[in-house]
Image 1: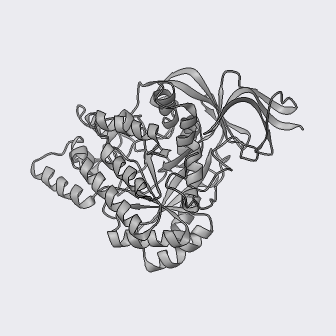
Image 2: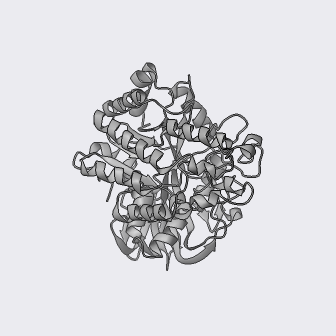
Length: 476
């Protein structure tokens, strides 16, 4: 058999196995895993490298409306370029429904933003902000059949959050259609009350973003979201968990037999609330929701990754420029933390941080790394086994990793649209040196091909919904 491409002499890693093998690729798919594959138009020598499934980042915000006068730093061109730099072959971005807008109108806008501009493959989660009878009764069921099989609801942010009855109605529609719902869990009423108290006391600096969004507000909302899902009897994903208390709500729900997936992010393992308390307005760089917590919360999030409470490790990439009147330092944001855009960049740094801090420091093995950064995302969001693994018949989405390469993270190497990285100066061990998507090299040593190689991915229903045995179904 002759191949288009053979990757030779590398160590292949999946979520369950590690083995030395050549990888034969033809017409964009993996067609052989064996020793001594030689007949190929292109041979890539992977001696000393790990051959991993391309990363899948299932929590990415790109080119999203962010309020009057505020502009998100990444469009689909720059955001997916940065994703490729970090070893990701697929990103799942959010299609934000605005009030009074149909879901199909929103999708038309987002497809126009993405078409022909992506360096890696892309798919959309639907964000439901206006769950009218028409949206839930007609549009959403039809769109799930069309391959838009996941959606997100917010319990915080005025203009985005849903009331409990609206969440129940959305969850019930998801149950009937087979969609999977992601939930942002923070208690908006508590947050607004605390903001008022801070304003009375003249507390407006960036650090007060964290004290107005305490752990209890996240824990309560997490418990409430799980309770609403239990009432309707539908699986959900609790996203960007920042602390032990919310994590334990997920653990207890699983013990009760609920089908739940949990997600955490690099910022909750690498940053703390102290980062918001920097001189001047530099703390604005670290404003995100939920906010970073403390060292004990960092340890808890690592425990969640190690013990399997968290199935997903995502970036929640939500980039804004810092020194920009349309970004973090807009005029109102300079005067009050509540007007600082929420979010930090991280799509390029997600994988290197977990590889360095997790695999290289012995917290997790490399199979667990693959599971929480690629395979589980593919399973949970209806892309497996086309994506998320190295197997016969799967797309040849492959990242070659040099475990010995040391890189100091600086903003200039990440190629995103933001003017900073919250991880500036952090040295990581292990770096993706080449990325293939469907057998074509997209990135090699920091050089990314022209946009347009990425394709939109229609998706199946989630394995979490299809499986009837346990809430741990996304795990390998």
